[in-house]
Image 1 (spheres, helix red, strand yellow):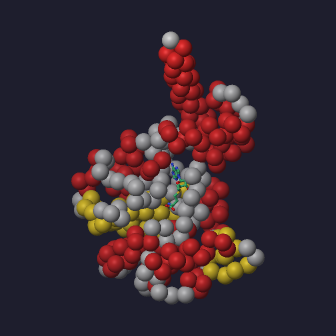
Image 2: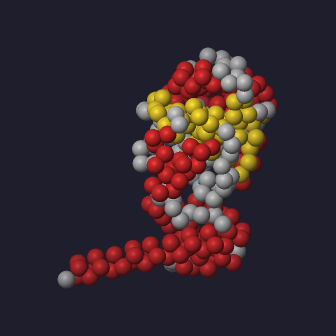
Length: 284
Ligand SMILES: C[S@@+](CC[C@H](N)C(=O)[O-])C[C@H]1O[C@@H](n2cnc3c(N)ncnc32)[C@H](O)[C@@H]1O
């Protein structure tokens, strides 16, 4: 009997928390226009619980009260909700596939437009730029690099990388098929490596929210890696539809290795270039 009561109390607490989180996300959306309502709940709940613990509050209703009245507090919460893990040449095999299978086709175009959606602090964007320089395609390319977060976009523009990460990035670069001296692409000052201006020159950074903002036009490639995993299936489908509309015919889509087109309505619009590496081509 005691066990049954304990279970019921536990379930009720879970249900109350679920309602409070929904109300908090609704409040965030209605007050600030950031729509987290269709983000995958497990990861969001973990992040929110962490913030709740740090703030010493007992419930998400208290957090909601503060969010609605204090935009600085909200800005901090937004940073907590964002997962900003990234690397240069992350998943090197993906870049090797892009170099081998996609770049030769992009070379047939007079001008190439690439959108990196959810680019975080810019590491994947600069990796792409380096690869395109080496392939002689960068002069004819414009990269649009966007993220929901102002603060990561500001960091991306600076192109500063903590020196302790450079060794791993160099290894990734060579695994991805890079044959040059990786150190030619940055200069070192203090504890940071700064990406060379030559690499930054054809990148336009801006904020863009995949949930609430519109499409870009006629992209030859969309790279959106390790962003959709934070969305529920419905939102993933919506965003993938947006990418399908953004891509020109025969354009390429590159997702994260744990992400898939499989459940999206637009899946028939694509054929795989590499299923393992989640590289697709729009065929209609
Ligand atoms: C884990 S990082 C992935 C970074 C990079 N694409 C990579 O694979 O290394 C996820 C990024 O998605 C961004 N993000 C989350 N929700 C977003 C949204 N609705 N619109 C645009 N970017 C979003 C986050 O701010 C974060 O920078």
